Length: 407
Image (cartoon, rainbow, N blue to C red; front, side):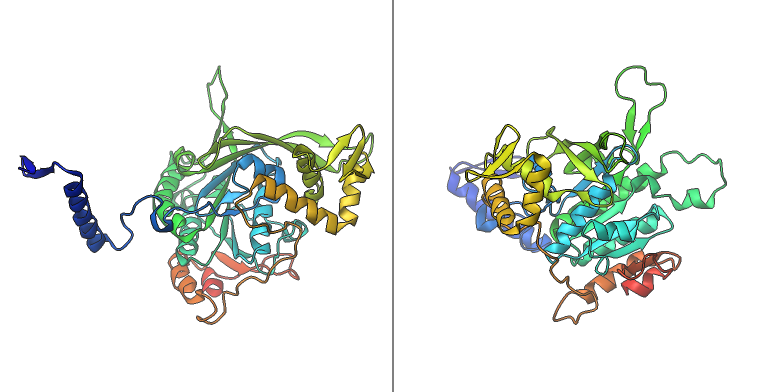
């Protein structure tokens, strides 16, 4: 007897019969839920290498372990005020645009500076921006953009500014307990599945708050409850270490410490100390020099830096200046560093110019713009929400309705 009955469920006694039963179950599942609902891990390229968007800082790419921010995942960047959170996010936007991707910025704080974004390398003429009035509008717009499948990266700045509609309509001083936490929990439950399928990277910028009555341990916490901590694949903490200046001269930047607090893609808790220059962001040449020295591609003897036994500068500043003036050698060094760190990834230089982004007004044969416009209408209910395409010639965003720009 090949089968024993356990209640009403037949128990197969051989491997062949188990596989036949499993195949029958698979066919039933695919008939009910669609093809690909159940598959073997690793079969038919079901699992491929992780696609990433570089951070704009090769040292941070190394710390993340995979070469950048993973596509199809949720990222949280948090830290104290003026620590460089928005700068990190804008660098990611610039890197996505350099590779021909479409980027959207949901400016819940209504504080994005177009000129600063342009200085960091963002093509503001191709950047899609929304300045919603409520947290519900912001998250609906984010969901619509993700569902479109046309957007490569979305930045929400910030979670603390996602003010619930009930709080806006209420009186000053009214207590609204846990509204943002409930809003974020519901939104993330809806977003997590479609984000993975659309290969869109969703970055949430978050602020710190202090817990009341904490005598021991760290009293700091992030806003928006704990749902974002669970749903994030990567959590990055950014803190200012010191202000950079020479003697009595005016300060020219900050030294920041970036810590990977959570990482589902690689080992966590790695740290990076790097410089953020005022008005310029990361110094890509300085980061490349440090990474090349760390990987022993550039040799450092005393104060001298040498590449292929030829001296390129005495002192760090002179070596960085050499890289800035000799782009051929810089690209050669960058290729060597990235090939050594990430051998399975195709090399695309962070120093290249922007590729033309896909136009959202293109014909259906050129893009999925119609899909984007249909989906975006779900988050465009209130005409007071302003969504417009950034313009390099326009330093301040014009007041236009969400519907006018997304539809």
